[in-house]
Image 1: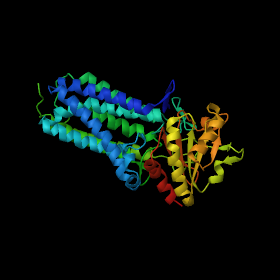
Image 2: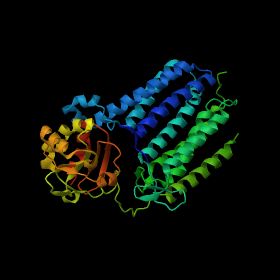
Image 3: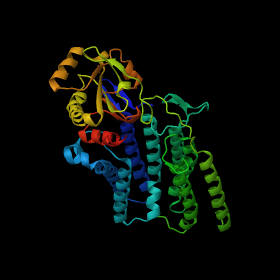
Image 4: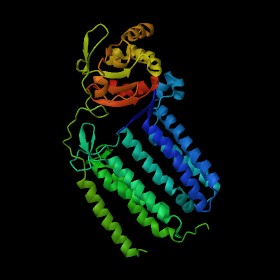
Length: 244
Length: 180
């Protein structure tokens, strides 16, 4: 865990640095994947940047909406340098809405676009896992396994590293297959299936998860539902043509 | 390619094994809260002297919502957020809010601390961490770092960097002030 990196007199917030690096990698990976899929890579790059920026704005607006009484008294706080005042769920929802709208305007085939975004999804998962590892969030249950890490006063499952490993496997599988001829949508569904399987298994050791009634982890239930959906959807994409 | 029947079997197997794993891996119910400097854990102890030498302990504020702010007089963002902390302290003190400003005295000058207190008219307790032991115990690696502690002594939020806006501080403490 390393939430802050001290470089000379400067203290840099490590998860923020990882977010910036991850964002840059996502933009580059999606741009290249777009060219490979026969789409306009330059335009796709612009769209991904728009999505990232709108996600950040959405995260701040969402935070302000959730805490609106405080912002009514101090509206300038909306523009403050406060790094804490962001809401991740609002950011993701805003990014998805803006991104969907932008992509819909291009009239590109859905499954080809999703294949283009596949490396971005895997990199986003990797970025998030490493951000959590740096900040110490998303920690695991206490454990005596040899690879347990000391965190928050106990040896624990390195659940953030399990998530990072899953994302890396998804990236490797994508990299090995992205030039092979296959039905449009396969790359995206493969990446999502690996991430969902990793979440279903890996989060079984998480101590910091949102619990449903019966102490069942919400992330595992969602991951299982996504896996079943992928198996159900997969045969339907085989007839979709791919841009050459 | 999977045939329809094979896919149905795959889905059925996945559902059974997935649900089994979800149930088997449920987190234990007998979770005891330990002491650690992060959200969801009991706040580590603080016993430090003030500028007048009087010792102040975090334990004495059990039952109150406590903002523990680590700072130094040479740190610009720390200085910038002090008036916000003071304003919040003045307004919410009666509802059970306390601010403990832990000065990293091992890397600061006590005279500057006293001067800053006078200049900014700070009324909340300023604690002097001469050896840096409390800062170390709280894993402080940047200034300012702010811990929001609830009435039970549990850390509810850790805010890195600053200056913090009044809005985000209010957002952090308001729900805790409403708790019994």
